[in-house]
Image (tube, rainbow, N blue to C red; front, side, top):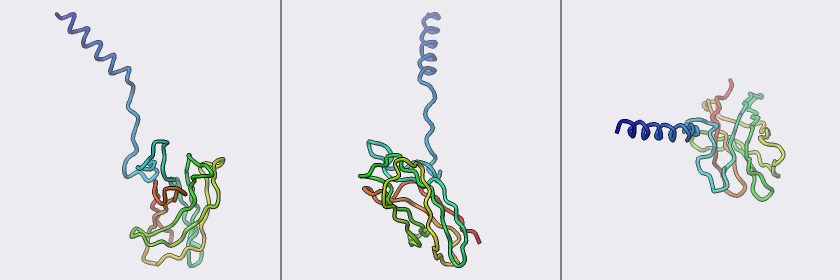
Length: 143
């Protein structure tokens, strides 16, 4: 009886160990976490990976790094925008071609006028087929 119990316990431990560690899942608050809404092929929307905001005279310039690993000429990240938390859009950069051989890629948006009372903005991407969405970045504006 004792030997049978030891064999069952040993088998259970071996099964648990052979499964390996569970894959980590991105935190819901992680700004670079992959898009929550994904289709069967993977990522549905482009993710904003990095944003550098610079004060330029009366406005701001943004260097935005976008990741869209599914890029094809038929479906690709075709824009990104800078907006307020309430959805007010301050500027948009339209992307006219896929960046399949350049992932992730960085593009800029300059001369963006933002009201003085706004201290941070959200940058988000747009997919040619699915619209706005994906991982965003909230950026504190330099003074």
